[in-house]
Image 1 (cartoon, rainbow over the protein chains, first blue to last red):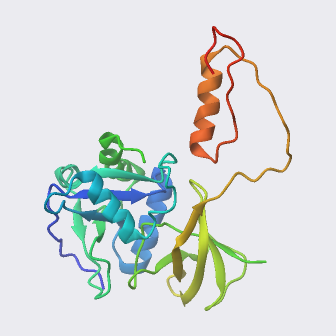
Image 2: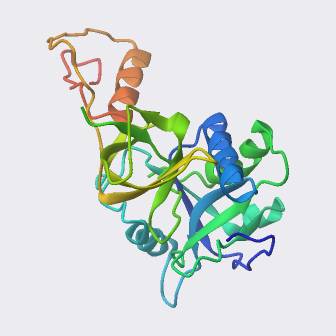
Image 3: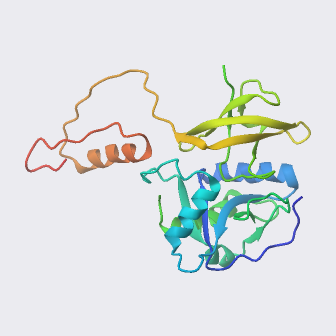
Length: 135
Length: 117
C-alpha cells in the first residue's frame, strides 16, 4: 500500500504522461486516487537515460513499458506529453512508489499535496507544456 | 450492449491493471465483464475486463488490453462531400488543427497558383 515515503528519481529522468491533460480532468483522477489510498497523486512513467541512450530512446522505452507504443505510430495526435524530472523536482513535487511488489519499475506517482486545487494541477502540468514536446 | 468505462491510461495498479470510479461507468457492469475502455480527451478506445469492485470506495478495477488501445475515428452521422474555397490562412489552419486532433478528414488541394493548399 502507498506510504508517505518519497523515492529518489534522478533529475535527468524523462517523465511522460498520457492524456488526459485537461487540469480539471486530471484533478478528478487525483481525487479518485485519494479515495483509493488517501493521497492525491498522479501517475507518470519515468526513467533516466541508460548508457548511450538519448532522451528519445528513453521515451520509446517508456512507451514500450506502458504498452501504448502502438497507439499512434505516426506520432501526430499528441497522445502523450514529456517533462524532465528536474523541473518537477524544482517545483517541489515528490515521486512515490505504490509499494506493491508487481508495480511497474518505471511507474511512479507524483504527490500533489493535501487538498490540491486546479492551480496545483496546472503547476504540475506546466513542465510538460514547457518541454514543448508533443508526440 | 457492451458497457464503457473511462480510464486514465497513466494509472497502473495491481501490476499492470488500472481502476476507475463508479462515476466513469456507462452501463451496468459486474466482475469478469468485458467492457470497452476509453480516454475521452483524445478518443482512445480499447478492451478491458473488470477484475474487482470496491463498493466502499466506489472504484472498479480493470485488466486492460493496453495494446488494443487505438485512437477512434470520428463517428460520422452523415457522409457528405464538402468543398471549401478559401484564401484565408486561418481557415486552412483551423481545418489542419482538426486533422491533427482526429483521424484526418480534410484533404487540401491548391486551386489557385497564388494561394497555397
